[in-house]
Length: 177
Length: 188
Figure 1 (cartoon, each protein chain N blue to C red):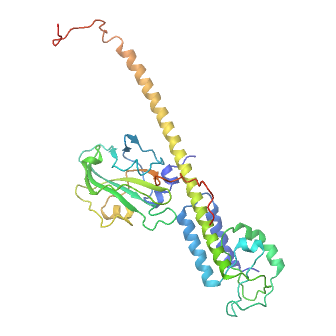
Figure 2 (tube, helix red, strand yellow):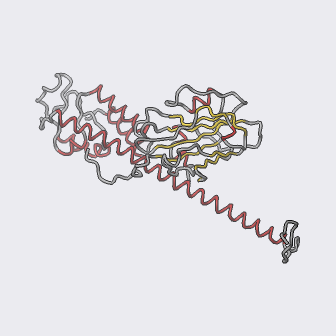
Figure 3 (tube, rainbow over the protein chains, first blue to last red):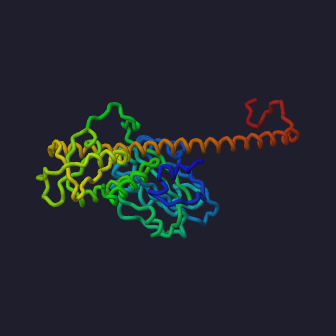
């Protein structure tokens, strides 16, 4: 019995509620497709990714949210979620470049721990219906979606990110506390 | 013998948290719940680890003020009988304080030792959560890869079939020209 990786990593749960994937969402960093759970270091994700997605009607507009639910550290995520990128009014079946970047892309630079970085795609009710929040930290994707009538997500992708000099979750020497 | 209410509380939480990798949030909530109940019921509650290592710090009975009671004697049978239960509550605090229970005095722990045990305990919880997260991460990634592989294999088969079909159809259509042809921009 296989469980959706999004549920296993608790992306569904911490960031969004269970949803059905309706639209294909593909995120590329340096022409490399992001697979759920893949590891990318800050140096690889310094520039904003290319985001392609499906959908059939050009008259439909989508919102893309990129959050870090493990900020500042996964053991104690007091800033959950940290908003790294917000693009709205993206026409269907195009890419994020065609949308309006409300919150500009900020290169994730986790200091401690291995963070999940989540992309969530929503379908908007209409054009120009989504507005920018005040702060990046303590963003709440669920509330944001209810506030702007975005409904359930139509797609989501996540990857793992730790600082460039991180040891990949493995300790080289046992720490003496 | 032991207050049944408190035991039910802690064991239920243990069962829910020890079942497969629980999310850090649940663990934290559970931890907060337990520390809250302990704060309300007793001052210093002994650690399972400390208890098992022999240096047991008896909690003061509620009638006296803290730190001065030395006239309690532990009912040895009750402790032995409940060891099985104690073992299942690894890492969590248990409140031993029951009104009317007599306790023998063991070596009193110094405040520094108590602080150290505190930190050790916290560290253990954090480590456990981190390990659980690691396991979930690993599982999720391998699951994702397996799904991808299945998808790609399917797509591959489909494309191969289509390609073979198309090949059959195309053989008769366009005769391949074997000769080179000169175009208008040729130099000679």
